[in-house]
Length: 151
Image (cartoon, rainbow, N blue to C red; front, side, top):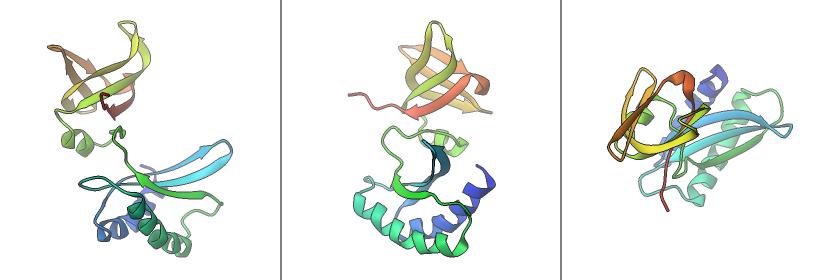
């Protein structure tokens, strides 16, 4: 995480936890010419719109007072989602044995996306298993790893 998102995480975490949720991620990104500050939350049983609204209302004045971002931005609080991105070692540890989709920068075996059960995560190397076959992906190959929900 950047220093800015670390700072915002430190401001957000106590509020999020007081509301019975956990802080999943903070991102500050530019999309279509507009800056967005997004706080992603999670909780057992799922996050509802009321959770997002309460946390947003509580966090907004805290962010205004701390003023970590000089420019204007759109502030959003949302659920980490069922197909959330896994980034930190703790994310991978939490979802070991779950279905994930690994997206690659360059095709491997004719594909840029692989779905399988998260079997291992060590020093950034992601190992998945699918139909008895294990595949290992090095950090430099991986564009993104997300939980995968089958329909």
